[in-house]
Image (cartoon, rainbow, N blue to C red; front, side, top):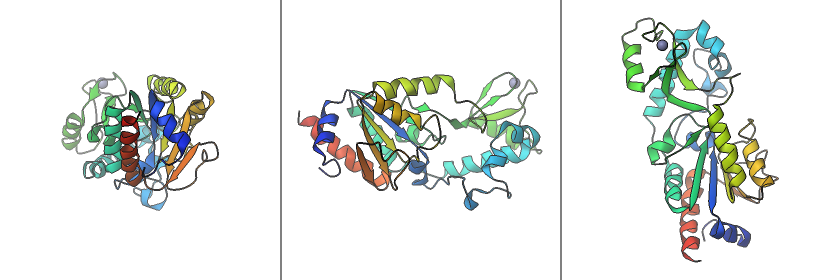
Length: 255
Ligand SMILES: [Zn+2]
């Protein structure tokens, strides 16, 4: 075994019918996606708090839209890392598997994960605030390119916004409901690369624990949930998850 040495963890993973994984910004950061916090996150001297709200979008549509195009460009030029790939493979092996993410970059899907529960939306999707018409990134790019003012309008005249959850907005109801249900029913719950500070995502490991799930955390530092987890694996998810996958394969074959 490379990382799963704890006998209880081995037993729990052997028996687990449902594996649930929650991922956060740390997993994307390892692919080179900035967290948009602090100095490096400033865009035209504006903080994410000044850009990622409906009010900002409404009052300053061009600047906010340019910022999202800039972020999409960064994401477009990055690749899923070994952690993303390991999770995609884990999905194929586990009897039941749910992947819940706080990330909006779609890197899990690019690595091959399916049915990803996206708590904060997906930055590559757009929709009209007036008529709800969905726009693919290609369609949006086309509208944006042909619009010198960088104010993207729908055919109906409404503004087109990114499909992400902004400050002050509620999470998509269906996603959060799915996430809670999966967490409750999990036998093993993995919290990966998340500081576990932002509610309601931060509640999910706690909900899992209250329902007798075995809690494993993978993070490069100690977090707000480290004191309640059953196993804390310290390090980069891109390094630990591939080893975790190898261990999981071994112990599932050794029933
Ligand atoms: Zn519209």
